[in-house]
Structures are given as structure tokens and as C-alpha cells.
Length: 187
Image 1 (tube, rainbow, N blue to C red):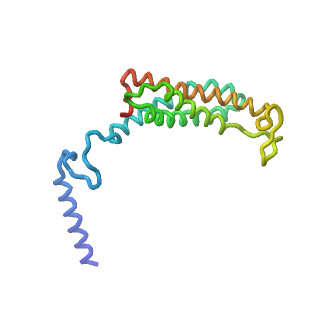
Image 2 (cartoon, helix red, strand yellow):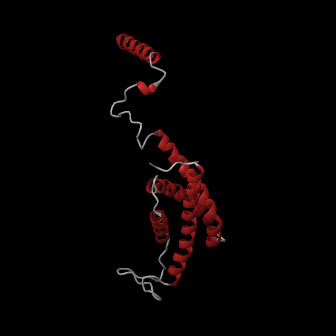
Image 3 (cartoon, one colour):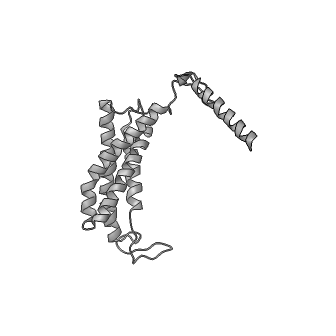
């Protein structure tokens, strides 16, 4: 009882004294497991650049996709809102990946287009809803392609346009922000 309380009190006083002795410049304090490295590609400054990147991607992609999503989902305004919100999140994540894939001193437009294309294709195909008339194992949905019926082909077109606008706008905004110096490319 009393002995434990006295010991805790002494421990608290020692911790308070140690806290007061901490240097104001923490860069000189050794951190276990982390070596000081001025060339660290994953330091706090790079993390902050990734946050800025996500914001640019979400704003540009979400804003550009909003009218296309509206045309695709009208008259279901709840679906329009949800799809627009999720599109902004997808564009934010895309922008971060784009920044890491398309790096400083890279002058390869095919890489830029490939990153955009990979995201467009993935989002487009995962948004397709199989028609009720389809049978499974193997998937057969009828004309014109058996695997894809006319309804599914229409979904591919709508979702493809949405995705191209979404990720194309985010990539364009990223390139603009790089040129203006608002965001740095990943080294």
C-alpha cells in the first residue's frame, strides 16, 4: 500500500525531471533503429508531399467525374453522392500511387499512361454488375459476346468514361502541380 504509493511518487518525479532535461533540438537525440539519413526517401517531408498529392487527386478527380457520374446515376441522387464520394477517395489513392510510380527524372509518357490505364481498367471492370439472365460456371450472358451481354457492354462504356475522366483529371492535375512546384515528384 504505502510503500507502492511512495515508489510511484518517486518514479513520477524522476520522469518529470528527465522530461525537463530534454534538449530542444531533437535531431541530435539518437532514435533506436532509425539511422539519420538526409537522403531518406520516406521521411516526414515525403509523407507531407503524399498528403498534398492525395488532396490534389481527390479534388481534381472528384470534381471532374461529378458531372459524368451524375449522368450515369440520375435520377438516383443518393447513388450519385456515394459514387462521387468514393470516386474522390479513389482519385486520392490513385494520386499517391501515381506520385510513387512516375518519379523524378522519369521521362516516360508510356509509364504515365500505363498507371492511368491500370486504374481505369480496374475500376471499370469491378463496377460491372452481371445481368440477372446470366448463368454461371462458365459465365454465359447471351449475345453479343456470350460472356458480356448488351447491358454489361453498356456498363463497360459508362464506367470506362467515368474512370478515364476521374483518373485522367487526377493525373493532369498532378502534372500541373509538379510543373508549378506545388508538389514534388518522388525521388
